[in-house]
Length: 540
Image 1 (cartoon, rainbow, N blue to C red):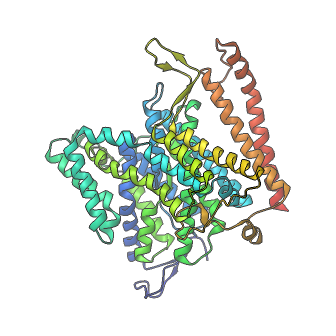
Image 2 (image 1 turned 90 degrees about the horizontal axis):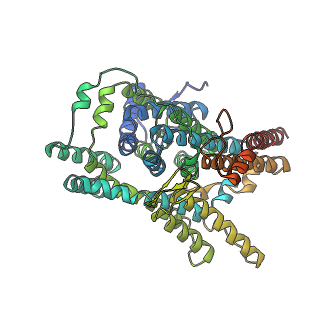
Image 3 (image 1 turned 30 degrees about the vertical axis):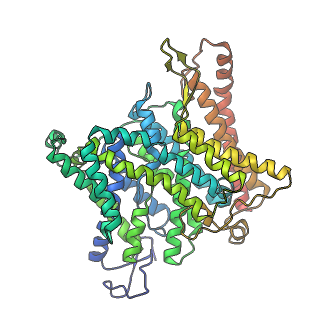
């Protein structure tokens, strides 16, 4: 059976009790189209909320969301039902990049592009050697801390939007809470969408909505595309998002596997690579970074239809909507008060997802290693601890230029470093640390990944020295590139500059010379050698 040949389930109309529609099956096309439209509605609120908050063009975001979804289905060979929508993990770095000196949308989408490249590289590595190394690098206590700090870091933004129009924000907030608490079925799952609609109606009554953009927009046309503007000083704001995207994708694969009763572990690498490719495309043209959507898992759980045919309908439908400029202009008119009301809840929920990972994996905070790993990153993220390397200090104390590292980057890096540092110290004292104390029963985090022995038995992971060297050198190449990019940015240049730009500082000049062409050679050499080692290990 070909990739686009879905087997008709039963009579194509009814789903008997206890039965499910598998990814390679479908109902008749009328019912399949109806379910595909449900998926569009399910992803609508969250997918559009990101560009509305960040100021990105909604139609462009929807365009790349649709393209990314169809690419995901192709690369995963129609075995993994999923819709790729806007990722909330990008909210904080995009906001920082948009507001920084010499920043803007072009700089922000460059960060999205680089994040997509790194995620695609992670996906390629997982396709070669399995996903076990990801779980060892980021056990549940680390993953939970990173997810939590990304949500809580956004709290000041929610407050500023809320205070822009407190009445509208309060109406929106109460509407979302009521739908979330009292709504059943579709009303409960789409509480954010319905809350935004009620808040929008309130804003219209209060005269807070400007409809002029809708009147000026045409009915049919391509969305507005924006090219990325290289600025390597923002990499440390964006790259930690990869850790969250990895966790979301693996959790999605595990959830679908649990619902369909199929082992989809071999699709993890393809899922990560597909999402990385979709995020790269969004970064090239001006869309928001993508991720697999839990909202659509709710639709599948309710309908028991996991057919990828329905997702093709959703992808094509979303693509057609993105070609209606009036539709995108209408979405862009959502005022700040509505955003403030929904974001107070939304950002808190993102933060609590990290806490949920801790709870579901029974992370024991009576152990110092978990207490330190969980607490310090949260403080750095919530306080948005910021430090600027290089740059010029003005008389009023403000700093221009240089490389600024914010709370999310500090918190993410510190979470990983602290855990493995304390773990190493414990082992020196002869104390054994259990990274994964309990299996995750929901598919929401990394802890459900199969262990090393299972992966090796299924041929998903290699234990040869070649595979270990391959992963090590690829990671080393990425680290070298990031470090070199930061040093170049401190001197006002970047790794893609056509010629070397000499700074005034002698020490910085020396560092920039060492990290320009030598940095490129080291990066290409390490990644190339690592890729060759992985290829050799796979052949064996």
